[in-house]
Image (cartoon, rainbow, N blue to C red; front, side, top):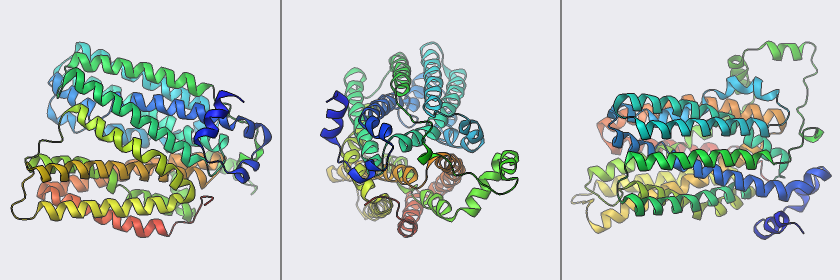
Length: 449
């Protein structure tokens, strides 16, 4: 028995019926591909942690003396920049038979972008350095969009239903181990602060991680002539020409308009932003309340890593049972946590600098990131399971482009409300989460149960 198969059978709960539906060669390669996928995503997560737009890059901007106004652009460029181009890139990606190479190309682009950031961190300062890093981050996000479009298609081609969620969970767990290790190292090296030179070395290591990601992913044995995953052609007269001539933006609108299950998924995904957008506001509220417990770059990285480590394996198995239910429960619990925070922090005499105030903020931050881990695993698994072949690629691209726009709108609304008070932003996000529970329960079930 190969090492890959031994590892696979040691950590996976197998679905024999789902595996039986695969072609013989694909079935034989499942253990090998599963180990490669987990390894590649663990390396990818290592690279992600070194260039995190919510933790590492803001610290770098502060160390370089970049104007604060540019710091506010980091997360929008990182998140929306990787989502918005995907619908436009869909026709190009669909021409590539082996989607593995799309991912590899994206990983190498990200490696070059992170290496450029490291060079700027080591040699630049002030406004010029900030602009250069933002430009490199935009290139990084473009490479990430290629990886996002292709990775779900590769996973759908190489793994059976009932095991994709577990792979997502294991990848998330590996990412958690990496984050905790990195966080502890950062605390040991720089304490509560790090110099620009130290962060430059960190970014250089991240570039190496992205190169290794490309190397490992390139070894995946992806089927290219598997008819069971082929897109069903439209046999209407002139349909092929019509599809080729339709602009990407019009095709995206048509898909959202005509495909009701997909449209409902995009709506649900929009409402699940409660767990994605709330942590920064929680940190802001903690700072306003005088809490000093959530501070230091290493502390942030450790908290996010611990949530991934604990939540990854559980979320993966729950997603394979019912990714729809996992999303609904995650949105509901996140909303409850936010409302509890609002009520407790508005109580007369609340002191964020007290022991129980620190526990409230630290515990709530950890809880929200843990919930977000489950929501992300559930959302990814649902999207992989709901379609096959090129249709899955279209779903991923169009939903991510739509989410790029929605993320900017939701972020702007919550930021505007925070001007009135952080509590208003948290209540707004909690209401979104409650609506997400209702909407997610109405999604069709696509998991094997």
